Image (cartoon, rainbow, N blue to C red; front, top):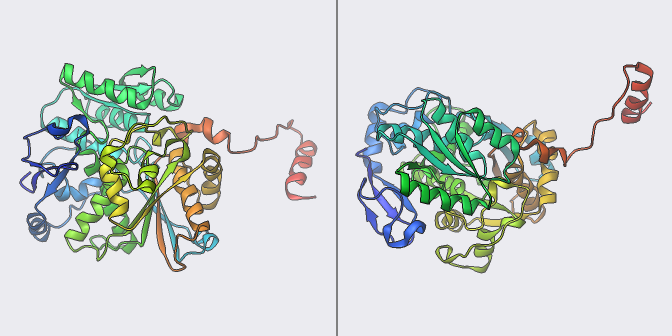
Amino acid sequence: MEHVTGLKCTICGKTYAPGEVEYVCPDHGNDGNLDVQYNYELIADRLQEDGLLDVRGIWRYKALLPIAYNAPTPPLLVGDTPLYRADNVAKEIGVGKVWIKDDGRNPTASLKDRASALLVAKARAEGRKIVTTASTGNAAAALAGLAASVQMPTVIFVPASAPEAKITQLLVYGAHVLLVDGTYDDAFELCLAATEKYGWYCRNTGYNPYTAEGKKTVSYEICEQLTGKRGLFRAPDTIIVSVGDGNIIAGVHKGLKDMYALGWIDRVPRLIGVQAEGSAALYNAWKEGLDPAEMQPIKTNTIADSISAGLPRDRVKAMCAVTETGGIYLTVSDEEILAAIPKLAQATGVFAEPAAAATYAGLLKAAKEGVFAPDEEIVALITGNGLKDVAAAQKAVRQAPKVSPDLAEASQVINGIFGS
């Protein structure tokens, strides 16, 4: 990994040599998140000589990832998710173009497969035997699925309130699941304590510095897909994404900065972060101009479990992603999130879980508030599939009528729908 030059603390700026520390800056305890630093000249030279790998998925960009070039990777196809052009949505909200990036099409149905694929590969390269994480469901499923593909045991700490479908997914993959009687933040801290006691490899979002490095691959894909040509990249004007712990928007930002440093794109797009009103720690800090490193925990209450975080773990990088790109944070209510599930599905055919539908709710709200220019090109990042939380989706749609197997009775219902 000679292209990785160090790990830089997001709070104090101190840089550590690769391997000098494992997870965080020791001067700031578990809050000292690190950012992976690269030698872009070396990466550019390698790419000029070898080019991007001619493979599908995130490993196409292996030269830009913090892993040895010859390191084995999990067999599941992660990445290469579709980018759909939604002209009807663009017309509805009055902008130039809207694109929907459907990352619910990953193997365990969320963007977080990108991080877990990288972390499982790193754990194997380092000879680690057990990988663990705390999660409200998606990161856990991603880790459990990717680890199962290489027969690596996992221990997962999940709030007992997580959607039943997500917990079931973990058990299907064979993960050792501990349901924590508490919040996501409680599960996070318990996972850290267990990691320290048992020496497991910890995948916790925003704690392990490599999680954002896996997630940044979504930015490479977006910009490459916008050109329609492999190896050519173009940035949109704006990327909008839902935010909980802040790790995804931090990863999106990192990928864009990578491409800008390599000259692949001519600007870094504006980033808009969408939070649930019931879990709006980053929005509140952004609105009040607070130092994200000094944020205090808040109580959360939202149907969008995947973006419920009382104290966002990647808060410094998540704040920089918005402030450095001239973006904004905004909030949407649970009612707006639920309404966005069928709105997105009926407009594009993409079924999103509540946390992912928050992105679409934020897109509609931002448009109403005049945030976008008439010719703006926007990518909305949908991070998880709606089958993750069918119970929530059921609250957003009308119930289907029941009829007997009789055409006359069925016709009455049909005529009521379409008119006689």
